[in-house]
Length: 281
Image 1 (cartoon, helix red, strand yellow):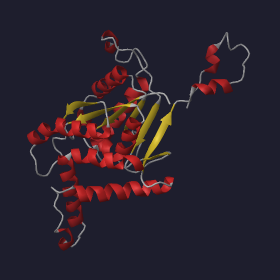
Image 2 (cartoon, helix red, strand yellow; image 1 turned 180 degrees about the horizontal axis):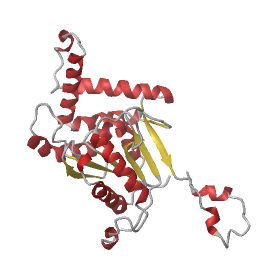
Image 3 (tube, helix red, strand yellow; image 1 turned 30 degrees about the horizontal axis):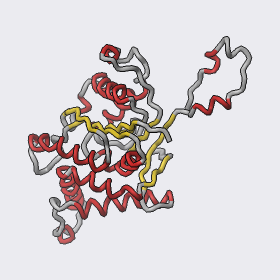
Image 4 (cartoon, one colour; image 1 turned 135 degrees about the horizontal axis):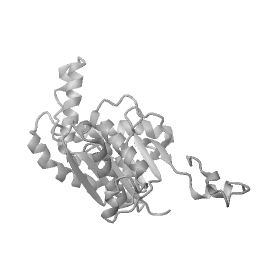
């Protein structure tokens, strides 16, 4: 198997870990170069910490998660949490296209731009910017300023899109051997794991759950509840694949070069190569 460059592009720290952490760790274990991009600094992602405290923790938590997954590097774009939808689309697209060209990314992970039921504006914004950047990074006239920096146009060949609704899932990845790494990557985002448990408790109370059932849950001791939730969700996906744990994606790829062998000879093709132009997918 050829070595590939894998680029995960998320809106927040813990997005990729929850949705694709086991798969990213598996790709790293298989020898591929995995890189993480986080667009915002999580500076509104807490019911306890200040924005300044969250910003101060962002880099440390991201690096801890990257180390757990076996990623080779992490890039923080520093946008304000919740306001990514207000970023100029061409600027965000350009930043992501720059990274795709710089790293020569073959495989992209991100939120699905076509998924319904996505309520977070940051997820929607990063999904569309990622889709646009990956689709047009091989066109030299898109963000031509990159060429002046010595970056070449680059074509992405695979996309792993995730969504809360698992919309049009067509690929399941066995993550049985890497679920522990996924959990460790999540735990590295302690600020976000505390928030996850705080949100769970808030939703439970709003739904009328008896307070006595919630009294023993301490959000600052988040590991047990996060582990139970992640294992339960990934076990349900794994059951569809016949393994202990798995993650689900809408997967898109370019047809492999072998398809050329299946194209019949067409009279005049040497003189008219455009006759073969078509959508490879």
